[in-house]
Length: 347
Image (cartoon, rainbow, N blue to C red; front, side, top):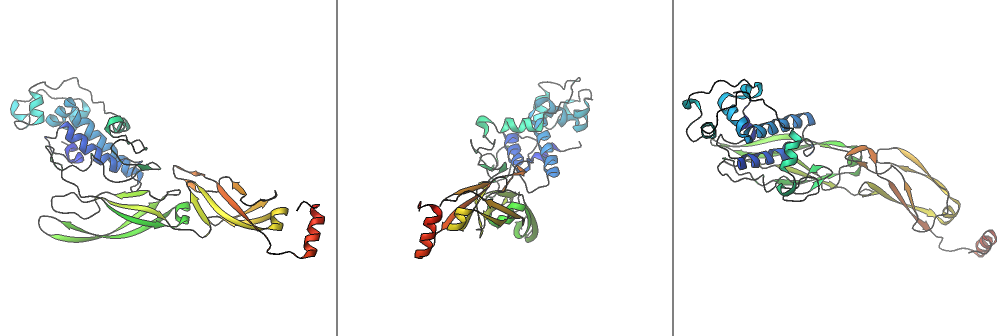
């Protein structure tokens, strides 16, 4: 038969349309290229395309009938053989058998696969879940285009006529990252140990997972490793989720895509100006010239020296330097007199 669409969606051959929708939604959440950064994009794109094609075929009565009777090659080539005897149309009560007695395959059928993104948009739009990035509907929120959270109302089926297994609840772990990691990107290797129970024995499995931290990721971003948690007998293994946390930095504070730093200047520097140097999170030395009079609370904005924007790391937020003027604790009579002379009594 070639490609096994039922196996791709992890449903049995009697799966109903509702069963197919549940299976598609769960797998699409895992493998959509833009929603799961833990996988190489080429791998995710290939799996997402296969999942979409399987749903397209099995949810369409005519495509499914031809596939069940003659297989993938006949479906895609359009070379539909003459109608077989009833004994070849699946077992009694099967989807193919029931449909066969209603309508024979159209000999002029041409296979026109639907676009994978169109199927995804249709399944997760409006009342079907609102998974467009705003966190609406029944699915959980997104962060910078990546799916946050491994469970939805669709994805944790407890059985039903499609034979889908119950899935264990996702397991979350905090992943502390320095601001430098989130600025430049980094690879972190995490050693995990999990328990797998099957019909014959219980075994412990150790594995090294590589987490590819992308420049610009924020606190709360979630990275999902599908089915890498513990697995019990008869239950699909839990998803393992790492949640990005931000370590405090000695110089910078993050505000969205902007960076904030405090800079102290003396009273003389606040009046006469100063050139000072800052060290960026990627190690560059940037000179900053302040020529205007600095008042307490003054803020200087340096464009494009903030955090990378995760959707387009070539763009950055801003660096905001907040100044604090350090006043002298006391002045001599001579200093006061000189200041009055220089400033014309304005002090």
